[in-house]
Image 1: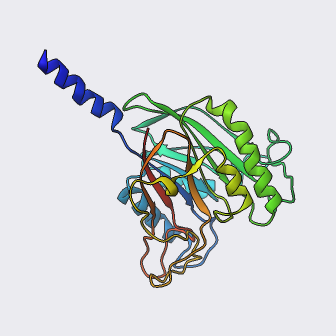
Image 2 (image 1 turned 180 degrees about the vertical axis):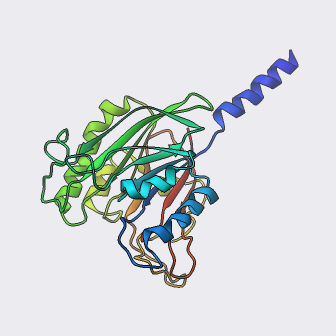
Image 3 (image 1 turned 60 degrees about the vertical axis):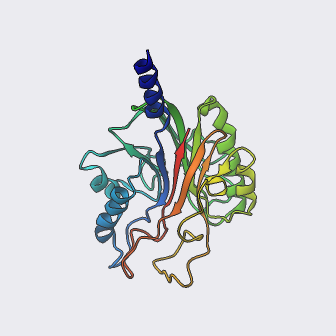
Length: 273
C-alpha cells in the first residue's frame, strides 16, 4: 500500500511539474545586409532555439522562405498564414515542438473592422495586421492551452488600441476558459494605452516572475548592443492568463559582436499551470 502511495505521489509530480518555455520572437523580415542577412542569421536563430530549449514560439515578420530552414529537421511544427489577402506575406506564426505538443485547432484573423476578411485594413494601419492563435495539447500530461500571437502596427496608435481590443474580444470565444498566452511585438511601451488595455484581462509575465528578470529591459536593439548601455525600448511581450505560474522571465541577449539572430531580442517566459 505504501508503494502505491509513493508511486501516485511521484506520478503527480510528473504530471503537474512540467514547465513550458514560451517565447515572443520578432525574427526580422529578410533583406538586411551582412553580417545580419537572413542566410547568416538562420544558424544563430537555431542556436537560440536549441540553447534555451524553447517549446512554443510566437514569431513576427516571418515569411515562408525564412520558415523553411527552421522546419526542415522536423523538430518544430508551425501554424499560421501570412497577412496578405492571398495568405502570403509576413506571418505571425506559432512554432511548437512536435514531440511534445499537438495542434487541435488554429486560425488567423485580421486586426480590422472585418477580421474574417484576409488582407483587410482599418484604423490607419501602415499594412495589414493579423493575429494567429492555436489550441495546443501537451502530450506529456494531456493539458490544453490556447496561444495567441500578434504584431501591432508601428504607426497608428488607434490601430494598436483597437487591434488589441479585437484580440480581447475574440479571446473568450476561442479560449473557452483554457489557460492562455498572448505573445507579440506590440510596438508600444508598458504604460501605453494598448498595453494597459491588454492588462485588464492578462498579465505581463515579467511582472509576476518568481525570479528576478534576466537580461536587458529593452527588446528592440536594431543590431546594436552595448552591455554598459543596454536597450530600453521594451515592445515585445509574453502575457499570461490567470492561474499560470511564471518561474522565469528572460530577454535573450545572445549575440556575437555585431552579429545577431534578429533586430529584436526574443523574450522568454518559463511557466507552469
